[in-house]
Image (cartoon, rainbow, N blue to C red; front, side):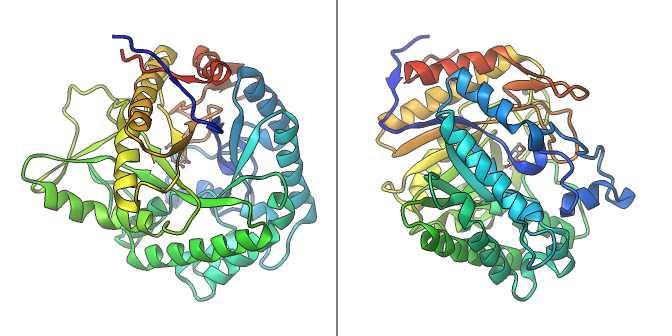
Length: 400
Ligand code: NOJ
């Protein structure tokens, strides 16, 4: 079935996203690096050199700009900028500033994430997010990012997926590092409060650096779908895992929406997808319209006036044709939401590169393949297709 396409709203962000630890390589002062080398943590594979993007970021940006993208979301690595508490590396700050300038000079508008899951080891050692003084320490780091973001950066994301940070802390506290067969572990409440406070402090710090920056944070949305009669159970289940973080974005300049799949909820809680459901390499149900639901839910919680940016959406698959199908369905859902009046201001695919998926290189989310030995980059057909939509400035409404 084919429909007419939708012209991009003015200023629409069209890009791809990455995160420092997942692509840079050798992030040796981070908590994740330490965990990856701790046999007790049972991490299947360490990140090691990752995509070597710490040295090859120019090539990554050349490819993205050449493909037709106009926006690039990447993160600044706290563990590099502040490897020792209170000691800020001028060289690393200059490195990330060169990335901002490099993006701008290629016609890519940078959306800069300040914290994407990894912490400096010293911050973890002093107790992480819930320790006394953690919020001030994060705010001090953000203040020290001023040379990176003060000029030329329009969008900053303070903290990526704070709800997943709280969920992981909850899982760790419960002494169970595994996830249930469906749904997510109960988030740790203290961590929830701490990351919300850290976000608010960071928003203030970013605005003090440059009040022209649009600042927000990005929430992981699991698209909880209530089975008949389970509406209240679903709302109660979702609130601490999602809505409390969406509400905390009130007063921000935009909110980032990230979504990959859905979770059905019955009267007794989350229900695994049926055995015969198509699954991706992360074992998530293949469900392209997820992001449309996520955008609508976010707008319902925070109010229709809040600008929404899809800061991540994508699929882990070795079948690139299926990736195009997924994005086609996802974009149709975004176009329909725009038609319905939602204030959607951008769409950034996860991910620019096949990268380190938190413990394994197997789930390939990338638009661009990366040879693990030579680091050679090869854009996949999906990258050419998606990038080209940026040139024609149209969102397809075609569904497959
Ligand atoms: C969310 C996270 O922000 C990102 O780091 C991760 O790789 C993707 N989703 C896929 O799981």
